Image 1 (cartoon, rainbow, N blue to C red):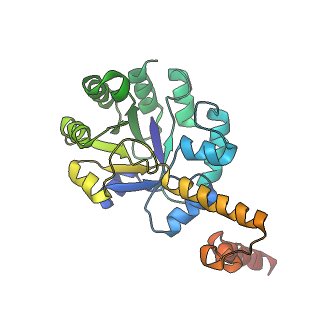
Image 2: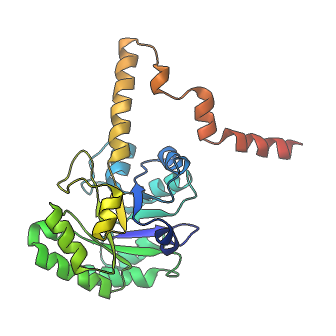
Image 3: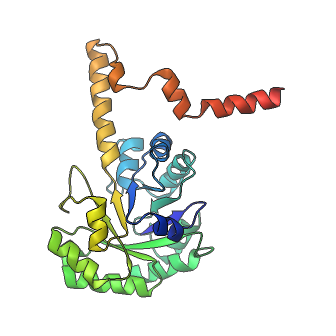
Length: 260
């Protein structure tokens, strides 16, 4: 289950950018970089967040309390609309109601839909992982029920080939559909955003692209430091570039204004 919040309605963003490419931010700095690169929105998912903030795998070790603080911190780095992964709602319908405002999945979707303060301010994506354990027919049936329960969009996790991607798109033609491009892992075949859009998908999530590349870059940095090698300026920002990225000039203007 996913929820979306931000200054601009998700429907408005989708109308302007379809298919919508959503890189995952694992901290406030990566959220700021995503905005600086010109993306109109981004996502916060458990895989990258838990790996970066806690150095742990995303296997249900970190729950709502810890994630809530992490998500709040990440959102300070960007003013863009954001898609937030709520997993399965962290419990029953009471928990999912609390999670949206701060296993019967259909009831959870209804609870999440009812918990929204307004449909325009929050966009609800319902996710099913039933494809692998239960097969396509049951996954499609679940998706149908989630849309009937009030979800704005549907995310069928884990299509393994183009045939499955196309079958899902055909079954829900006209509905807003989400898929994931887990670069560096996962079975869904790689396609460009344009190709996914032509298949019928409205949003493409990229949960691993940034965190995997960032992890490799940090691994190389600590290895170089350990070996006594000097910083390669071609592969790194300098101080001025970094301070510009984190908004030093704006805070200097605030300081100057009020000191005067």
